[in-house]
Length: 338
Image (cartoon, rainbow, N blue to C red; front, side, top):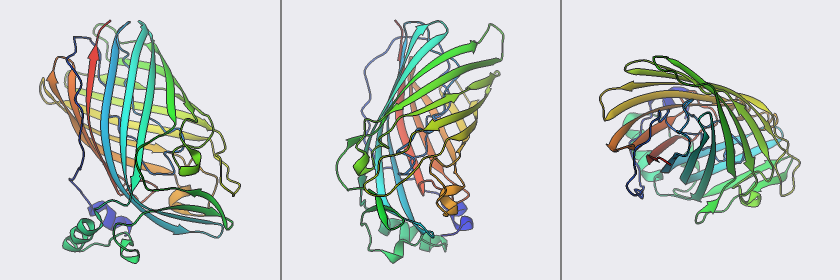
């Protein structure tokens, strides 16, 4: 499927179940942009930018989120030295906790659980694309609803993933310092975030890289009466990943996030955002990997109680880079004070 076809693709489907957490008490603070991240399987191995608010929780307060994400990936590309075949549907349970240590310092823990499976959407996607008169990403070249996760370099195997149940991926611990905290009547706020990804996932199955990554990010935002604008540049240093047989290196790289939120009412907030980062892999000769990843997300957050919000995001790439064909996120964000 070419880039023009991809821009015509829009899906509204989520086979997900979400556990809503208990009652919470009041705490102040902006809930930030949508926490949508690029869930392309090869990017799940490395540290990637997570959109974040520049406004920290109050001292002693805890802010958390639990979400279910579902995505479909078909990627069959061959270069002179690399061959990448990804054919799967992926479910991610995303857990995030942020705690206010001081009025200007907070820590955050991100814990992803991942399941990669053959899925069930291939027939639906084929009928959907046929109805629109667009291509089908080349899925018709393989049997429907079959699983593949294979990456080779120079004829040697780097990764060989397996279809199965949930597994722990690499977790990330972050520290955030508000160098420009929000002031009374002020509109700008900014913080510095340092993130460390630890190799807790099984690198042999593609749940982690087997190495440590470190990133520095600068989440900043402008807040008006109804609009909030977000920007977050960053830089990531990545360790070389483990490999079954091939010699594979990672690349350090830049990240850049933009977002906008509109407060439609006291209960409804609409959001749109763009998240880009340079490729975490060495040069492969496959342009869709080497050109980095750009993902556009649209969604909303709805208040369902005191400092409790339901969050929905639909994400895809309009430029045919290394991202899932689509990703849908549904979660709940909550806070309580300490």
